[in-house]
Image (tube, rainbow, N blue to C red; front, side, top):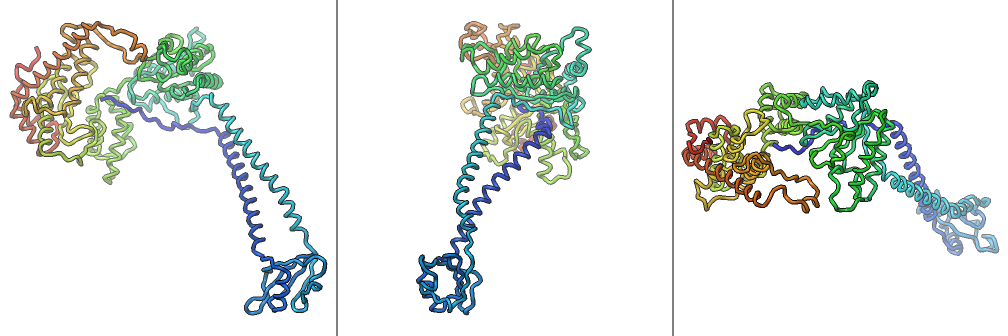
Length: 637
């Protein structure tokens, strides 16, 4: 299995300092007040205009006519302005004046023909407050709005200026102030890596002990391992054990589209680290900026190269009493620049490996610890079935089992939930909605039966765990084999048995339907077999004529290097490699053909059982093939 996701870690966000929270809260309050004032001014102006619009202004001659007709109840004179109270349908006086009018210039209202004896007529001293306020509003309101607009524009410009000034600042997240810290005891497996990193913790805790003896504190530790093995969690555990601040950043966060930004962020990061010493800088996926230089492309001012150069300079710039250690993680140590790996920079290399069976059991216990489970769940058996899986895969199995249990309304996680979760992670989810024709189901049954028959009879092949013709993931069916134990090495006979097993499906189609009726269903099997054969010849020197030689090509090199560099072997050797690969494939195909032809009746049994049940477990396959024989012509001598 090749896992492709990393071990999840908790509390990645860290805790913000209280001062930062108070400043953020203060800025938020100021913004609320600012916008509330603007809204109040707009509402006030709107209300004033609306209030003024409610009173109808009439001509003085119309007022005289309404008074003579008895429609007016009361008139209040204030200066030259008249407020008119009309009568309603019942002849009662209105509560508020609904009309206004003005006395013509040059004479009083009575002199202008208004008979004040027919209405209530009051004279009030003129109130100039409203006019004065209105005049002031006309003068100062535009000024106030302009000031508010100016302040807002200045604030926006200031924010953009701060953002531009902070463009070259480090984006590293600071940890170490968390209440709960990761410790080595919480990480199952990888005891050798823990032992190496314990020395780093001791350096951080007691630097004077080493300096007193003239020892130099390591400046860099490179964590190397496949994805999902817990490199980031190991780095967090170092900081947790040492009790020091932990600056975490990804290699891709240094690089921007503008040249020089990455180098500026590196400088800023190391300055922060020195101020917080003793501390740890953790650079995840350092190969994003640490690849080999000298491609001949982009000149010497490539942004990635400048960033790498600045990292090299900063690591050389540490003084003896600068108790700062750089941890970096990568999956591809082979592509890193040699200057980054030399002594004085990344002095140590810690390999984080895929967990072995005892480690997998410990990891599974951690992930199932807080989950309600049935008593019939056997984690030891699950650990045996998950050879080659990373800690992240095991965490995913536990999570998928819990999701399935919740979806089916189980009170506890059952063994069926765990089994389905394992199969979903290892070989993909079932696609029962993908309905196949009977002819296609029969062909798939022969194909998977061929794999199972060859795998069951070959002595050095992995054990058959399950065979199904239900489509899973991107395949039409699956023959799932599991090694009996973890293999640190692979022999020639084991490789050859794996080759024959991989070709068993294609050969079964050929034996049953004929050479002209084979299908594309074996494409992934052929790809896998070809990779195994080429790996045997090129990497491991397992050829017949090209034995004990390696023809490895560095695929992680720079593009220009691969274009300009010749292969590490001649064209004649390349032809010999192709010939050796073909011989291995032909030999595996012939062995598979001998096994299937000799045991054709057992292939039919497997086919019939698969069509009936769709899925066969390991014991069912073993029972069906218990009398099958291994032909002498298919044995390796």
